[in-house]
Image (cartoon, rainbow over all chains, first blue to last red):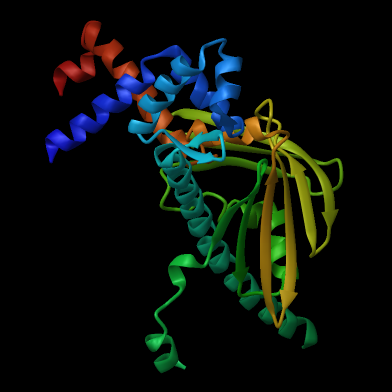
Length: 121
Length: 180
């Protein structure tokens, strides 16, 4: 189990140790791209870029899909998981905030009722 | 009534919805059990606002809260955590009593514009909070930084505390510490 985890980390660190691969992740964060797009952007051969993408794929940082002759790359489950985790933190903050808002408005409603009675009297 | 509640598999945990509506927009929604005018007051009167904006479960306190909820009016919130402070401020762009509020978030360079709408149905109010960032990059950066506004602060301050502690440790021990 521990070995599995550390093997996973090794793969990620290896994947992220290269500046081109970090650049590819950053670029895919903005939009999906084909291997050809990426090779052009990083002034590399198709073969060279394919190797980088395969390393990122193995680390689950990127997924690819081949449609016709074009292989499209996008951010993989691991990057998406980070966003999901953030969204959950954000949701919890607002959930707690709204719970407190509920109790503040409850009290305010009761007070309004009492004030209303006072005014009527 | 109670029986119904007990048998319902409780949607309580999903009362608050969060969704990334587009590349640059985050939307939070929740129905509050009160009429819109009451909820609106709680969003615009400082003495009410300061009682709920920072949930009690968060180790942060709201040190001061100034809200001038008029179009063009400013707001300023100061949070404190163990001696450090952090400010949030901006300007109200829209204030439509009991239905809509919008303000800027000026404490950061590419901060979002926040719009809140209040929609009353049968004595309950649907509150929708939209944070519209200037660009996809700005929202991505906010997410990547791990900051959710107040939630990230305790952590970052803890890191600062840790840093200060390590600096202290390398210096001569303070008299208090020597005694303790």
